[in-house]
Length: 223
Ligand SMILES: [Zn+2]
Image 1: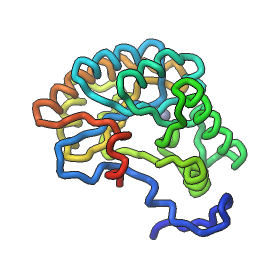
Image 2 (image 1 turned 30 degrees about the vertical axis):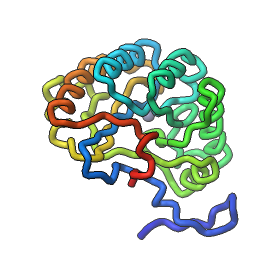
Image 3 (image 1 turned 135 degrees about the horizontal axis):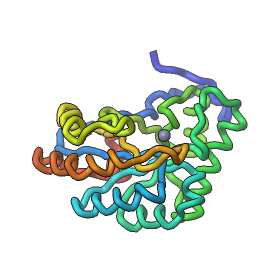
């Protein structure tokens, strides 16, 4: 049963679960690539280079703390036609923090991205993919759609390119939303595996006749 909540901000019960999307409802050969935890000074640039080579538009879920440290990379993402989304300010486990802290996490990231790009995001991915009704209510208040994913290649575990492409291929259906990482909440993680597998992934998508599309252009199909 869908979660129903007495929205503390508007005082009316609303159905919030419909705001969490995992894929696009489409028969077209379209796939969405999402990159979490950036921008990252070493990884985001090479990833943007590869995306440009394939004329692919991605969606970046940014950590506010990283946005403030790497504003030029955010400007480059925006200039090259990629969508920008909120991924909290410091990447906490949101269900484990109190409500004022939770609100501050979302608002600070909105402000960081708006300060650099000129626009407040309309997309949100919870850190660790974890949320509760308070997160959904706060997203509703801020005009954010929650975006999870339908496919992943476990890029953060450093798979071989061959394994990653096989996993991608097995999950490549119209409207798939793929989880990838260009950044890190700890700055210790290398994204070398993601950089290595991205070209072959895009090659596979092209071979199968899939276009890589920006989520911002397909919001009405998000389910
Ligand atoms: Zn994350």
